Length: 130
Image (tube, rainbow, N blue to C red; front, side, top):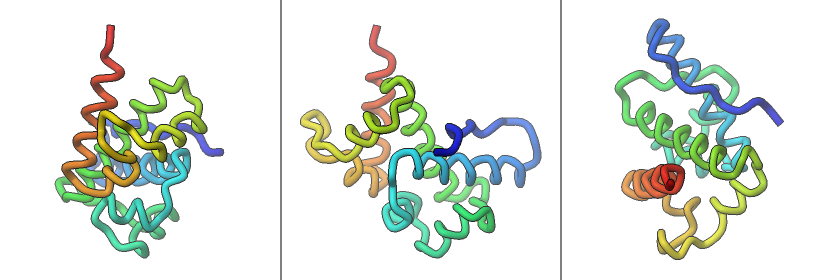
């Protein structure tokens, strides 16, 4: 499997930042076994655009809603990766399993903006436990 996604650096040109986020989003989806159809719903894009994004032929424009949603998706992945100690199987199991606290399967919830924000908040709070 490919390397873990990088974070979007604050330096570089906007196009470089867009390319980094596109690659990180594609890699996060691969690690979490998120299909193109589901990633399209998460980002608010067409499946064709997601396919082009994964092939490096489509960038998410800074300031656009898909760019912001991709940042949240990568943040979710990075949080899960930290909690699960880099174990992709455990992260996928959590993502596709029913979560009592979230009242549903995270993979279903993240396909809406409120659900994505809720799941990201939940994972962030789980990471911050002392």
